[in-house]
Image (spheres, rainbow, N blue to C red):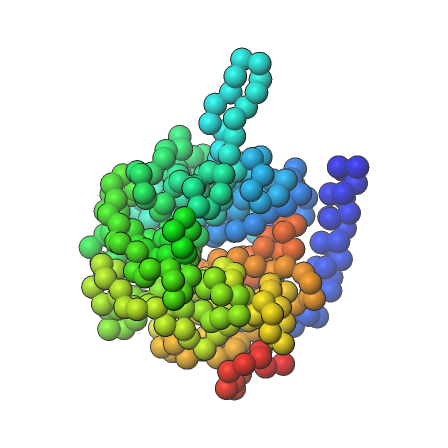
Length: 366
């Protein structure tokens, strides 16, 4: 039965590939593919992607289902035009007993970051649930082939909680982070020595007016840094805050003109200065498509006013969620996201060819 299930998934994925070319026939799309079509686990979620000197590396968590103790962190490398079979590089095993009993926690939300002329870092969370997990990290000196022994981050340091960090002018790595044990609250962490020591800001809000987590970071020409955040209110909007002092202090959270169904987002500042956001243009309960059944790309000049650009996937009652996005040295935009919890989908976009739609707010323009 196990093998039949995954054979069926492989067939479904191949069929989807044959259909998706029509569904995503847009001049901005360079290519799209599934990172894998079969796996030794039924579910995956929360992908991340980075460019290394040897090519792309992606990671995600996979196992029986989210929160299950067997969920581990899996990595695939893009080699010679194809994605390698995924390998589990981290798990939540705490200890084993002589009788073979293994005490294990689930893992969560991997985040990759490639230092210029330095190691590839992998951050993730380990623990029973998001309100009591802890931060972990490992590093690779060979572009994701092998990884150092995992180490736990200091107490109260989670590392980048879901989205990629950014490197500041002084060499510090600025990470958007958040906690869920005392309301949903955003804070920021930085490390000057590739994760050995850390500093953390206080939470930037009390978690009462807004429940916000999982910030993604944008850069602006005036030197300011903007963070866009997931909103716990499933009928609310994406939330924004700005720092003018390299992430030490932050403005009050404000809602922008894009909806958020309480789902993860990710964004990147492009080489041409514009900002590109991948998100679900949906609410949980209102008339527009609900939940995570549609995933979209929008573009902005200022990080506040966004224009619709592209629908990547849409299907009633399905889930397309938790995107990750980067721009590689060749100018292409690479994004990944959870595809129905069955696999990870990878898109390559030419941002210069995106057609921005006129929009006055509200539903996604068809």
